[in-house]
Image (cartoon, rainbow, N blue to C red; front, side):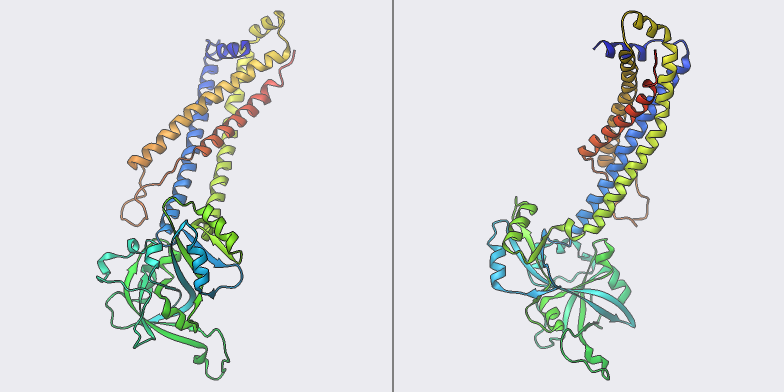
Length: 409
């Protein structure tokens, strides 16, 4: 307690040189600015991560079951019963996804054909991503014309619709070509290696994610199965969870019941994208810590000059019986007070700026509507605040220790 009292007195008492006070203030302000910048930067990364998660949630279901081996499996009532019997599952949709070649108006591009049944609009937020200004009054999924089984309606991503030069109401269909999965193929008749289907654009959707908008064609499941030559073929079961159900808990339960399937939530489906964002976030954190190390030289300078200024007082303390360890502890605590004051001020400023940005959108991304959001998204996570405080405290202690350990009798 005595050492803390002396450290606080040394910090706030008048110095023989005004430069010492200036350097101390600069050191504390520098720590505060860097701490605030660290909190704001990490919060922006969290905001973009939450934004991507929200965008993906409009297209992806709460949970997705895919086979551990191979790309497809056979749909069966027994599998559906096991899944739906779980109290956490509210609805199930079977989907079939395959890479195809789409052509229209002399344009040819690779695409992902996703066949969906009538429950797909229940397990996802498909209705919310369809562009209403181009949408007919009735959207039909899961069925196709029995009289013309090679034709169906399709909901196209806005990017792929633009590339194919198609839109709702066009009289010419989009042709899709899919390789034949099984059977003998004649090298003299290459067209026999593909099955063809025609899709009339019924609506356009926009998720503002290139992996969906620029690649996906949503078609009826029977059409996709006919194109692939198997009436039971399925790529995934997509599930909507009951209110209050926890995705991780339900995934563990289904994984135990169906070990031949992988049960993934939205983050697991896009694990690579979220992993990259996490790597970028923590690399940025380390870079700011490096800047903090450079700024900590102000702490070293302030304590070094304070030692010189307080030589007479330290001699008096030694005459009163204080040992070298006690003197070192006093100056170490002075450094802790300098860095701690800056850190606490920086945390308050950083949290305040994040809350202001979250509620009032002070910093925008620019005009023109070319961005997914108008302002920088932020999301404050308290564990990031703790990591920031720990990093600042560690750097402050290292900088102070580098000086006070050199104090000699």
